Structures are given as structure tokens and as C-alpha cells.
Image (cartoon, rainbow, N blue to C red; front, side, top):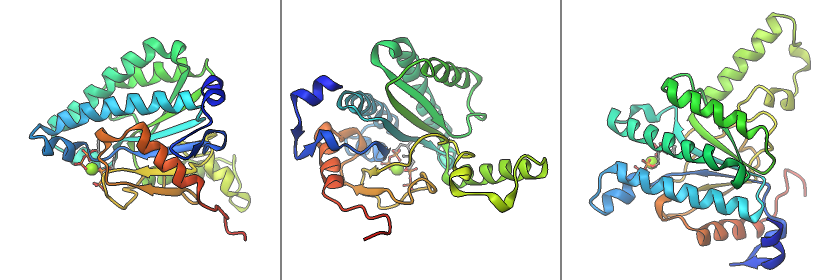
Length: 248
Ligand code: IPE
Ligand code: IPE
Ligand code: MG
């Protein structure tokens, strides 16, 4: 928001005039947060959903162009059915609220991932959210739902091969930017900064293609405890780095 930028140019060492264009977050640690409090894992997911609301709104307020969050991976189906359905229930609740206030909030939403195994109701809600979002300008939030980096790449390879077989593409002339057009992230610039809370030091199949030159920020804080100050720390760390992209 221009107002925010004019009023407060720095906080916690962050220069709001030099924000990354795109931040991606692996929202991890909900289960451990709940366990530490003697609560069921699903309570951790509910707390994590609140954190997502706060952080997404804040990203819009500071004028970030793109926020991508990992909400449910292609591997997360291995979890107990009751946990999976609690996560889907929280998503539905969030999207119903988001759709209702999208115009006021100026947040656009997209989904990365194969939505076909979701319930028809959730799928329809994602579709509706997408369509409404297309009418707005503003911060774009990409929710990775049933998303896996390898799944995204094999799907892209399949679609590209189909285009070759059917004469729409010529394999001799494929460039990396053309291939990027077959990914869920089509049209979205690569993330500049990838944040993973919860102390795990891995990607867990997140944005394998898009992370080629991302800066990484890891913290032990669990996602439900992730705050604006923690986001500031991540952005300040990002701003202190020298990105060379292979140059000097
Ligand atoms: C992340 O929190 C949420 C999802 C993967 C859906 P976890 O549920 O993985 O939390 P931990 O890692 O068990 O603490
Ligand atoms: C990654 O977290 C997926 C999401 C946050 C949605 P996981 O908890 O599933 O990752 P692993 O199992 O620790 O690698
Ligand atoms: Mg986890």
C-alpha cells in the first residue's frame, strides 16, 4: 500500500522500497505447535490458518506483488483421513470468507496443483475464487494445493509431448521460458525468497523448477507462531544478500 510505504519506510531493518517481488512460504510446524500444547494436530492447522490470514494481509499491505504458500502437498494424502479432512475443511472456510471480501481486500488468488482429487464443492469454490480474482489487480496469493514439484514437472512434460505429437510444438526449439509456460506457475515470476519455518532444512517437493535462484530463509519458529516480525527478519536477511545469478 502506497500509504504504508510513505509512512514507514523501514521496520526491523527492512527497506520497504526494495521488497522482493515474490515470497514463497512452506507453512510447516502446525502439528508440533499443537503437540507442545497438548492439543490435537488439527488445532495446529486451525492456528496455522489464522497465521496465513495475518501474513497474507500484511504482505498485501506492504505492497508485495506475489505470495505463494504451500498448503497441502501431493505427499500429504499419506496422513490420517481425519487430519486431511480437517485441513480441507479449513481451506473451505478460508475460501468462503475470502470470496466474500475479495473486492474490498484487493487480494487475488490462484491455485497451483491438481485440484481434481478435491471434493466437488472445494473444486467449485477454487474455480469461483479464480474467476473473481481475474477481475482484480493487487497482491496475488498462490495457494499450492495438492501440489508437488515433480508432479508439476511431469504434467508439463506430458502436455509438452502432446503438443509435439500433435504438431503444435517443435522439440528442437524448446526454451526454458517456454517450458515454464506449461507449469502451474505460468506467468508468475520465480520466487525471490523462500521461507521455511519449523526447523526443517528441505524443500519437500516445493517449487523445484521455480526455486533455481531463490534465496532461502530457514527459522525454527513454528508456522502458527510466525509473525510480522519474523517476516521482517526474513526480508532483512534477503536484502543483506548479494544475488549474482552466476555473474560476478
Ligand atoms: C504443515 O504442518 C501443514 C501441512 C503439511 C498441511 P505439519 O502438519 O506438517 O506440522 P508438523 O511438521 O507435523 O509439525
Ligand atoms: C511440507 O511440509 C508441505 C506443506 C507445508 C504443505 P511437510 O510437513 O509435509 O514436509 P515433510 O514431510 O516434513 O518433508
Ligand atoms: Mg510438517
